[in-house]
Amino acid sequence: MSEDLAKKHYLPVELSTLRAWIIAAICVNMAIIPLEWLRSGDGAMLSILDVAILVFLLMMLPEKEAKAKRDFSILVAGIAMISAILRLATSKLVVFDYWARAWLFIPAALALWWISSPHVSAWISGTMTTEGSERGLARNSKLKPKLSALGVHIILLHAVTIVLIPVIWILDVAISPGNILGGDVFDQFSSEHFTKVLGGEAFWIWLRNSIIVSIGTTLLGLLLAVPAGYAFSRFKFKGREPAMFSFLLVQMFPGIIILVPYFLVMKSLGLLNSWLGLVLAYSVTALPLCVWMLKGFFDTVPRELEEAALLDGCTQPQVFRKVILPLSLPAVAVTALFSFLAAWNEFLLALTFNTSNDMYTLPVGLASMISATGQAWGDFAAASILVSIPVVLLFIIFQRFLIEGLSAGGVKG
Image (tube, rainbow, N blue to C red; front, side, top):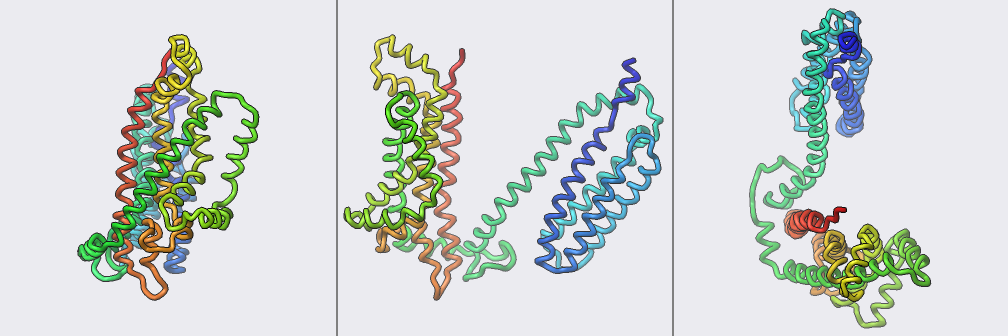
């Protein structure tokens, strides 16, 4: 009985994997069509043909005891490989061409290899023995996780590549001499743009202003958001629900609608062209989301821990300081990082409140490099890379801190 089940339920993992990968290749080739159309109309038409070939190959994937279908699928896979090779035989190819043709050639090559393999051929022809089916099931259990992991890594590699393409482009512009946006990648090297940016006084003034404003926003935001989030999580008081709803309501409106009221308030208070004005504005803007983030985390902390601390003689402030706050370090870290990045990257309020170059933050200072009369693309790219370095370092440092905080704050039982 078990032998019959083995023969009945065995399906080569190559065929199921090939079906999923061909579907993914069809989706990618469909995305390639508009990109090819932007380059040339002929390339778009050939990409449509590639999609049609892959769809036909998917339809022709063999089933059990379908030898004719197997032979036809091998023929279609061979045609797909030849089509990809012929398109690569043209001159003036770039990396995009090799990547696009790989999404036709590799699925076709895998189809040709796997479908013509001995054990798949035996399964298709119906000549596979019971022992072969049992070995195939054992083989599937070992091979399927590896193929699944390979597919996931390919997808993640593409995601990483998409993220890195603009970074590589900006880096190439920053290290290339002159003021060129295009050209070959990393064909020339020069440090003139970094030297000019770091050698100038303006960049260091902008950096000082951004650091002061970002750190001030983070500290003030935490000072307000941590006790507010804890109060909304633990205490019942009049107006609690409307207040929480108002926090959500504020997040639904674009920030530009408060620009004029903010400006009038800051002008009446004499806080234009000052660090304090930006710190207050950024803290108030980020406060609703920070409070909601912290409240959600405080809700997950067991109340039994507070009750036990109160029974041991702690006061309510001591419970918060010695019990709740140490367990909430991951949430506090995330909130601090969010507040810092919101202030570090903010442009509109800093541009509106500051009219003096000595009070510009980094986003406003970088924007001043691009004017209507001239664009210092190389200097702009170099300054952009320098500005992003602290953000990258913060993510690296906070990632390790969050992992340690989560493991140290875990509660069991």
